[in-house]
Image 1 (cartoon, one colour):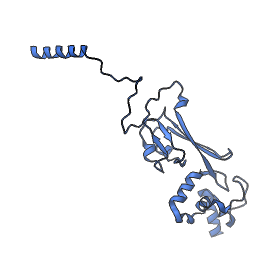
Image 2: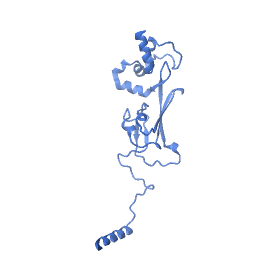
Image 3: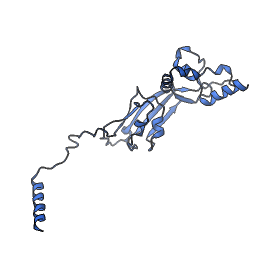
Image 4: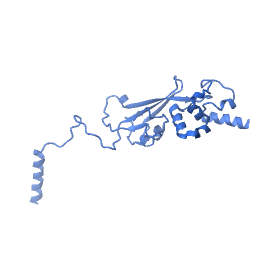
Length: 203
């Protein structure tokens, strides 16, 4: 029984006379591990404002605000890092793969929770007939580019890809008569396009 006791005393003395082993945080922050998921960041040039990140967020930490009455109509995506659980689903399931990133920044202490929010704003396309938001311009342009020649099967994507055609003659939200053939080549939401096509086919 004596040897273990002597070993414990030796370890205690060695620890007592040795310098403290601890990090120098916060005077000298330690780098985060390579796969660390920290503060979120939107990449404005890569984000298309589709809202996929908000759909997959289990903590509802990403908020989508559509303002069709602003000039131009605008969608704002806001990520709240004070609510975020840092699961990384937003980055993993981003439509473009590069629109949002979980950075390695981990020092998020603050006295004002408003500083924990990061946002990005994108211009909206509104339905020509009902005036409701369809999606962002960047989203439709991304889809048109992704589909390539196949975009010519959808009038909305044709208009988005070929904006120089100038086929939209009136702002969204005006009173329009019953849908007919002249509305086919307009930017429409799925509901209004269904009405136009059914009326065109069945009369």
